[in-house]
Each structure stands twice: as C-alpha cells, then as structure tokens.
Length: 184
Image (tube, rainbow, N blue to C red; front, side):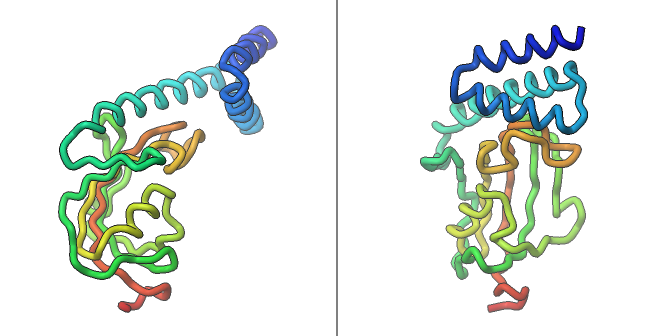
C-alpha cells in the first residue's frame, strides 16, 4: 500500500512537467523528511495546488478593481491613505498596525486584536511587506495581496498558514524609527 502511494506521488511529480516537477519533488522530499506519511504528503501537495489556484484566481479578479496596482512580481497594493512622513529604508525599524487574513477572510494575526502596534525591522519582514513598506510614507495605510513567493513560499508558516498561500494584509505605517528603535 505504502509503495503504491509513493509511486502515485512520483507519477504526479513527473506529470507536472520539468520545472513544476522539480519544485513538487523538493516539496515531497521536505515533507517526507518531516516524518509525514505518504497519505499526509499527498494531502499537503493537494492543498498546496489548491492554494496556488485560489491565490491566482483571487489576484486575477482583484487586478481590475479601482485603486489596485499589480507590480511585476505579482504583489498587489491598494493605498487606502497616503501619509506625508518619511519613507523607511530596509535597515529601519517601523511601528505598524496590521491585520493578516487568509483569502476567506479568517484573521491569522493582528496587532489590532492584541491592542498594540508592533515594532519590527523592515529587513525582517516577508518580501511583500518589505517592498510595500519601503515605498510607503509614514502615516500611510495600504491593503496588500501577497502571493506565496513574496510571503512564506511553498511550505507552511506556523500552525495557521498553509502551503503556498496568498495572504491579505492591511498595514498602517504609524512611525519610522531608525535601526535601533528610536525616532529618526
């Protein structure tokens, strides 16, 4: 039974094509090294594919909405309010309020729900945030649609973010701090 499932997964990898197959094979090997059973691996691969399709459909539908700008790398930015303060650089720390959601609207993280903004180093954020933050003046608020390659990639991130998820964020840049956390 086990070898039949592994052969089926290998057949899936080979049928995806050279580029996708290599990627899928790497995911398969990573999952196997985590101690997942073949059935769990198959479920994870299916979930990854479903997340990729759902994310692509969401970004395609949203691309034509007024105010949404889709960048070359797939990041979608909708400026909800534009501030007039300084723009942070990659070495700066920033004070932000944010809400992170799945495509279905479920919140997976929120500084607003915790009741206090977070202070984070721009360079320590996911690539989609880094790109958005370094183009937002202090006082700005933006809605971001972050494709998997600019978020957490093809794997999971903690218990609440699945493989290859497109993530939604509303980010408010409250303050730009220097690299030590002090006001510039």
